[in-house]
Image (tube, rainbow, N blue to C red; front, top):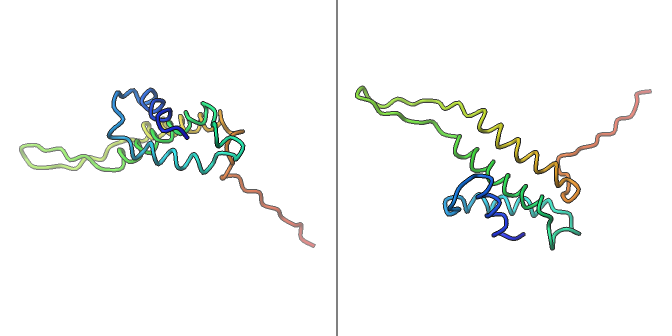
Length: 121
C-alpha cells in the first residue's frame, strides 16, 4: 500500500499540514489494512481502501490522545480532570466504520463469525 497516498488522505481527513507527529499511526493503520486486503487487490488497492487506512490512523490517534487525564494547575495545586471524550471517539470510529463499509468487497471480513447449532433430540 502506498504510504504517501495514505498520508495525504490522513492529512486531508484530519485537517493537518504536517504528518510527522502521526507517522506511527499511519504506518500502523497501513499494516493493519494490508492484512485485510483480499489477495486480488493487494497490488493496487482502490482509493476507498486508502481512505479506510487513513480513517483508521485517525481513530488510532484519537484513541491514544483521549486515553489520558488532563492535569490543570492552579494556585491551590494540581488537579486531575477526566476528559469527556466519548463524542470524539465515536466520531473517529464512525468515520473508520463508514470507510470500511465503502470498501468491504475489497477486504476480508475478519469480524464475521458463523455458529452452527444442532437441534436437541
